[in-house]
Length: 382
Length: 191
Ligand SMILES: [Zn+2]
Ligand SMILES: [Zn+2]
Image (cartoon, rainbow over all chains, first blue to last red; front, side):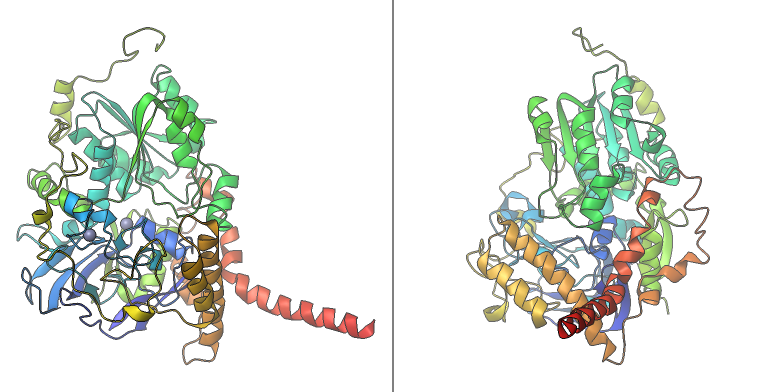
């Protein structure tokens, strides 16, 4: 089969690999019909996530058709069209029993701090991902769901990470009716977080980024006000003035490890790998939120230390809430919102790239060429 | 102003927003959101039909965090440890918990060594690494390389020039290191 393969920082190619085998009685093998590149894949692509091994196949957003199931699988059968949450999880450990599917303790031997994620380095369990023609899906009775007949494939693939993650981020913000919500980052997750903030009753939603074309999308797709932070000396001060010096009630960090806006921080984290991530957006969030407010962190950071302004967070009495999204918990409600026409995830898709051209796909997405917001990968285009 | 008791500014009213924004307030009740409360004890909800999963074979040699009691019952098998980078990574796992900087710094070192080893190995394989095709840089043509970057206020332009250095680093550093060592050896010889 053909699969995307990591060859070192900024380098990927398509290789011929063996079709994965059933390795555990509750495994399924899924033939991928549609996949995506996630913004967080760029952290891997840039070599920022520890223990990203040459030869790994990335991809934690994919849908497909069940090709084969292990002997203990009861809920899926060959031929089912399935959507697969980015979380690999067992459903039965201490954390899964409490609904914390993204924090599963039974699937990632390499780290206790992180659950399992498809195609996201050995630090997240060492699983190959879905930017490939076939993928091994552990715990087939737990993670995947059959795609409802009425759902479009492009909506389904965005429901495996980007859309539920943004929706979850708005929930982490504990938004109350009338709140002012600021979202840092106008990538797909930030755009979904902004859109979801309205569902939770926000009174005002402001999106901050440095890419004009994405801010345009924030205005049309997410009905948000926007700021391009490069047009202001000090975006935090601008946000304070904008709220009559109070600060926002809720701030969502949907940027993470490679934040721009401060050259030194960015270079220390993204180029020299001296920090687990560039905390520029997180520090702006801490500064821009009002005292007693909530900061929701969705941006992915690496496991080593980052220079976060923790003193301000303490003195301001902030609630900082963070997690990887437990995707499947969000699905029933998100399915309703899509059916009701409140949300159309596929509106964010800008590029559809055959698997064989995936290196170009990574470059276009990474260099933000061509108005790229969400690139999909077609594994069987040829 | 926040110097008095009331909220110092007014957002649009809920009625106005409900009329303007599709779905506004559909999840208005904070108690009725899918991830609230964060922990909901319900072991039957996930579809798992086991107390503890069957164990995946092959865990004898699988590296694991020493903060885990054992290798988890299910684990990824994408790229087993190998070579010098494998030894570095194995040390990181065997000796240092996730709480120690040494654990992560060794893993990062392992990543760099892995890339060098893998590039070197590729040059004696039938498919050597090709930094031109593998970086996807050929996509520049036909995807608006100029208009995508300029006149857009993009703040990443201040550092993108570093990217080629990172990509080409091993190719440039290799010959330089060899040259440097040779020069050093010659000087020693001459002295
Ligand atoms: Zn992702
Ligand atoms: Zn679990």
